[in-house]
Image 1 (cartoon, rainbow, N blue to C red):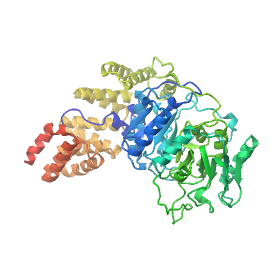
Image 2: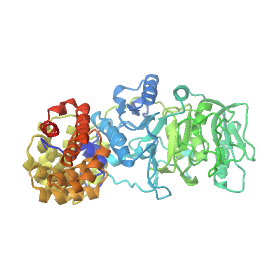
Image 3: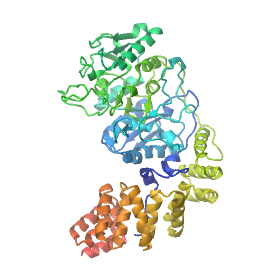
Image 4: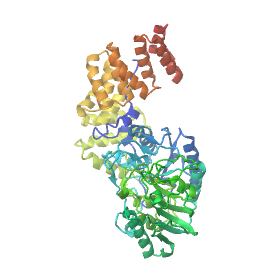
Length: 614
């Protein structure tokens, strides 16, 4: 057990704990995000954050192409390392998507400046969870819209859907406002996706040079059930015809499939839920900039291309899945909404808002989100957020704004963060000092500059959990285990359910051979977060040090399954294998550790274990 070890700042994100204000939300790394405020109505590529998954060649290819075409600045491009699977757990989402995006915004001072987040092909689509209206399944995109709000320290529910404050509802389009940082604490998230790179490349190219021509095709199902969607299509036609767009509208009110030989700028239908429309190709001539959607529950569930023989089918059919928006993208549409899981009809994009807003000059992202009732739900929007064929207001670069001298935050973000902090029952002066320390730390300032501020904040208000945790990390790093223990105890006193403090204190005490006190702390951490590999490892290692090899086996193996390349976890499992006379397994584990990190061969514990094997 050489040197400090435990849950670090990055793992705090995974643990879903420890804000600077209260004990149950995001970690220091997530809430310490600082940026520059926006000028109202100024929306350009300066307001876009492009997210590329470095683990996915497809994501890299799409992201680099979009960056080239739109001339996205390097500081507006974040490269993360997340899964290539279409579905991930919420913990993986927070640790590998939300956390790194937040960290990038923090270190580049873009938190307020960014209005739009653009995900790329090869990024996960869905966060796994429970279904139903009170479920926890959500699209990655929809969950990421709430990142700004989370970073202020505001509580955001995981269960069910959240009302979208940008949703226009029953108000006329003439009352809609542009999306600005002053008005909304959200990000508008879109993605660049499709069955192939060529499909996505075409979508990007069309979005950069959109057309103003084309008809709006609204295809009703015209059956005696599910009339809600048809009524919205009727309303969409009425709204468009009440203005100057009468000639654009093609409403198909019968059971037939809507067809036209004219160019198409907008399209909405029931897809495969319409008995007459279980087709992959629409046969329509979409112009660049065309947008649309379908009343289909799972049309955004995948971007893996089906076989040529596949045909869409109604919901519940045993012959195949529902329509896919990937087919609309291949058909030539430029922007389209979809759903990664069952959203229920009331959550689907409202066409009676979408098309009038788009024609009124709102960009692609604004038009879809004005039409979207809920966030933290099942929706995705595919397309370039800046696509705006009818833009009526000039768009330009966004400049920096004033910084609050007390908090070190941009004024807008500072105001919102302090407003949340006032509900924490912590001393406001200490919170402001802590925020300033976090701001400086986010900008890469050295420990010598930020540590005195954290110390000042905790001297005024010992219950600031994030500051105490950061001071414990500093103490760990310089080998001052006595201060680290004091800081972890302070965290537990303020937050009895803090996983970080319980785990790290247990490990520190175990390293001092104080196993009787360490064990219940490790057990509590494990009860609170058994899914965290480092927590399982701490518990298993303490059992091992107590010579209780049977009790050590399950948590250590669980830790290894969760983090198979973590050197400490590999060494601990090798130690147990030797104790159980399984030298072959021990050799394999040590070989893996050295292959993962060749420097680990020089660790004292690794050398000692090699000698025992001999």
